[in-house]
Structure formats: C-alpha cells, structure tokens
Length: 222
Image (cartoon, rainbow, N blue to C red; front, side, top):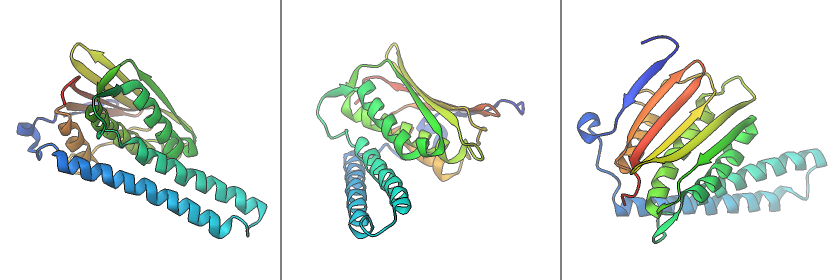
C-alpha cells in the first residue's frame, strides 16, 4: 500500500463484517420519529431565542444572532429532509437528493466555506430506498465536514449518483486532506449498518488529495 493511495475494501456482506440485521420496520419508524422530533425541537429553540433576545441586543449582536438562527433553521430542515421513507410508492431520487444536499450545505458546509456539488441521473425509486440512501449520503457528507478540511476555509464535496443496469451507484468525494475510517470506530459502524440496510457494498479510497466513498446497491429493492 503506497503512502499516496490508501485503500480499504469495506464490503458489507454479513459473512464478512458480522453485522446486525438491517433495521426492521419499527426501527425505521423510530428513526423517522426521532428526526421529526429533532426538527420540531430546533424550530422551538430558534423561536425561543428570538423571543428572548432579538429585541434587546445591539445591531452587531443581532446580526450574529441571525446567523446562529439561520444555522439552527438549516439543521431543522436537514432533519426534515431525512424523513421520506413513510411515503407510499416511488419518489424522484434526484429531486430528493437536491433538497438533501441543499440542507447539508446550508447546515454544515457553507459556514465552513465548503461547496457541495450534486450530479444525479436517477429517476424515481421506492421512497424507503431514497430514505436509506439519504442517510448514507448525510453521514458521508457529515464525516467530510468534520474531518476532511481541518485548517482550510474552502473545499468541495461532490455527490454523484447514477445507474449501471440494475445497480444504483453513489459516490461521495471531497478534495480534503484525506482521512482514515477506523474499522472499529463509531462512524465506520454507523456507515456499515446504513449500507447494510440497503443490502449494499461500500469501498473507501483516501489519500492526500481527498477521500472518495463508493456505495452500490440494487436499484429497485424495497
């Protein structure tokens, strides 16, 4: 393994990774309810802060407060964007990912000076499939925001989603400093569980020019 191209094969078959079973219906319902409650809590928090401070602070402090309020609202929108799996039938993956990436950008990336570019060439797929893939993308973009751009005030995260036959391919990449996804770390476990819920596979490549994560799964499985 060279210093310039670290490579980890994180295929998520149960036999290789000894993972738990994919989340069942009750667990997914709990996850949706949790995101819903987080979103509502953040809305209430923003309202409470505005009621408490907005009329009694200086103009300069008010501008700082409004930036914080916008960030809280962006995180609320992010949590709402992750709740689509309870819908019936199929939804547009491209439209969903556009909304999700906008929420991720406003909540996490833009305040750091990091851009977010989405390329999606996939039409409608089952809503539950969208939700699971959205959770994977959100986790990967969050990891990039936390670890890829230390000491930098600019960068780019790219999300590329397309079809290859009956396979859905999702690539999340960044131009950061590279990062090691520890096999036993909490972030790695979350990612593997999420990909396993898609009955998919994940491969991570990282080096000095950035990190790229490839996730593949069946396109239309429920």
